[in-house]
Length: 482
Image (cartoon, rainbow, N blue to C red; front, side):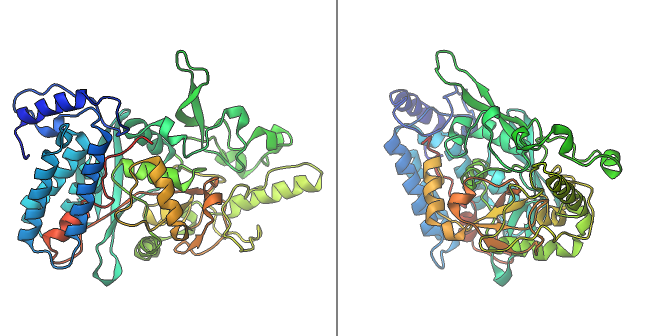
């Protein structure tokens, strides 16, 4: 660091204690440090707002300088040295904030590394690998698994490497969609449910008007002295469909035969993909673990990589099991009984005609959504279960608060797409994506979720500046609470 641990901590204690409550940066509390204690183990209280903004400006300036053409390795090292010194000079001991220390540690590791930057080990120093206490395991040249300390134990995230055309840097994409369980654990450990409910509608179980199958529901609590209860967690939905939609409970599904043998449709669990969420919430959760959403072009590249392993019967698609439910609903309608459509709540591309008659010839034995790990690897996950939000946000986009995320998405609304197929939606090419109206996307869809991604290092010889810039995407700004 640019200053000794004892001097830095003294400044942190004096500057930060005087500033408690004066800003909205979301950080941790000061912990006493023993002599020689690593900076990575020292957390801090909030610094004044202007100091946090000054740090974020320094970070923006560093990324801008690193991404200029032809930055030599020596110049890149000097940029990092100057950045660390400037951060160390900020009042309030900002350099000891956990988020800042993680970023500086990742930058230093690459400066000291002799590697060219194209080995899978690099994935351990970018994306989720920069979270304090995170460990990674290189499964093979194209797969890496992270285990991240979380409130409920270890949070496991697995990624595979997707090459991009034209010599661009590869992208590391989640092997599976984000499950409702992972989503919940990330918010609980690194964010906040009060923040989340400012961008994701919060409703009581008896007020749930969502159409189509539901994986999750809100859990409410009442604070001492508070007038209204607040949402504090997510739990499995009590049933796939709203009871108010139904004719009689025993008429919802056909009886006998394969349905009874297979236990279709079962009950919702948080192991299923997170769905019924706005893209704002997906971006919010992704940045909490130093990730982002994939772009449309990255989705196409991922599908090109895995499509040869695609077997429709091993992916959860709108197939013959779904057709049984569709025909059951039609028969009930003919008898005067109002039933929810088997495609209720699904995403249908704007201006496209969707025919419930078009289904896959295969049969996966699932009606609604199945656990994210139930398919046969990335091909099944990308092809079906849920479609997914993809968006190309600027590399230096400010996603440091829920308010900033809303603004960034509104500025990039034309880049927001829904990619792939689902268990409910129209039969189409899983590698393709379709535009979606942002206001409609914010209502959420029963069959649209998301997966995590982070940028890798360009294949072949790459400059130190390029490798350093990779650790700053998405830009790890100090997160604000508003």
